[in-house]
Image 1 (cartoon, rainbow, N blue to C red):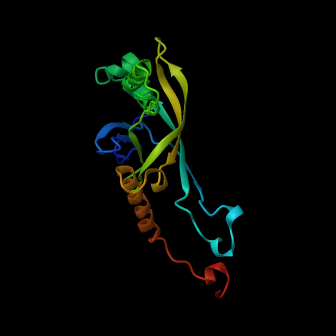
Image 2 (cartoon, rainbow, N blue to C red):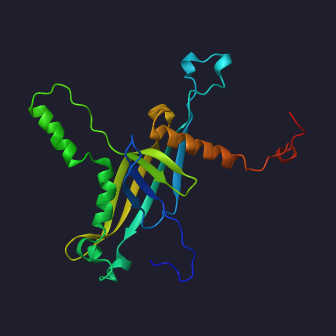
Image 3 (cartoon, one colour):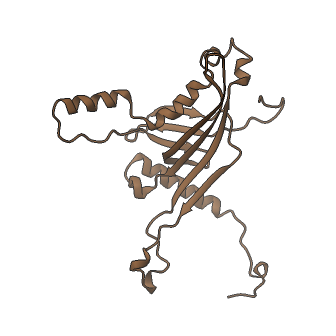
Amino acid sequence: MGAFPGSPRLMRGGIVQIDPDTAAVQNIVVLQYNPDSLTRTLQVQSVAPAYQNRSEALRLTGPPIESFKLEAEIDATDQLELPSLYPNAVQYGILPLLTALELMIYPTSTQLLGNNALAQSGTLEISPMEAPLSLFVWSMNRVVPVRITDFSVTEEAFDPTLNPIRAKVSLGMRVLSVDDLGFDNVGGNLYMAYQQQKERIGALAPTGTFSALGIGGI
């Protein structure tokens, strides 16, 4: 699955995890191969029908709820052919990359132990554990804060010690907008930059004409 000699270097998608307060980078996971397709769904946020009247028919209550769905392939075949360069692939197959992706939806063991210690000491109210802020990066034009909503793995081949060497990862993500994060933090600022970039790119689309629609005007 190596690149064809002389082919252009392709950018890869991936997920960056940052501290939600300081924006310090905590982890970067790059997809080994870009998925063949990326499904995006946008759910319009408008005034609920039960409260609608004629003056509110066109009103929006906020940005649409946007979600991403992708399936990515991970394969250790090329790495296993070069054991001196990729000793981890020989020992673990693709397990490190799979695990790095999975851990994005886990609280850390330190957080779990800390909450358990609080419970054992009689603390009545224990706050939910905060995860890093995940950013889905799909080119420089799409850097967007997300929450991973579902994650599944199909392991398709194994080495003699049963480490996976080929797998497909299905990943679902929900975009976190200013409705979720607010305007006054790192995540909200990143979302606004994402939407403003959309607006700039959308303005580059050619303007249509009435004649193309088969009408003379409105």
